[in-house]
Figure 1: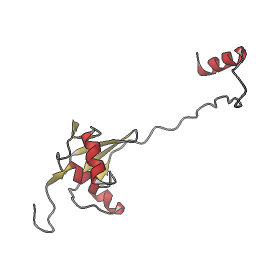
Figure 2: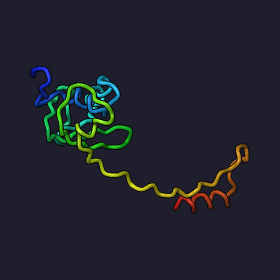
Figure 3: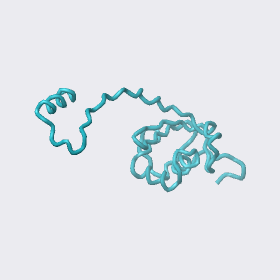
Length: 127
């Protein structure tokens, strides 16, 4: 362990992802890492995998993948304003939301669709 005030050259990925606010708690981060949702430099990570400055960390959570590059190794959690000093966020912007065509809504209890309504529904769905 380096002396007081010195920044370490590497640290565990579970500790760094928690400190950089990628996960709410270190336990949640470690569970996500064990589940294969975190990669370091393209390789599946374990909680004890070491990260250094310049490493690429990919975190998949909530259906989205976040790509960050380690710019500073830290072991203590920092405030949200200081996260920009710790990592470089290379996450691509989300795709533009497309307009979803309105699905015809039937009143509850209206019974089964008629043959004409079924054909309209199939035509609408592209069948």
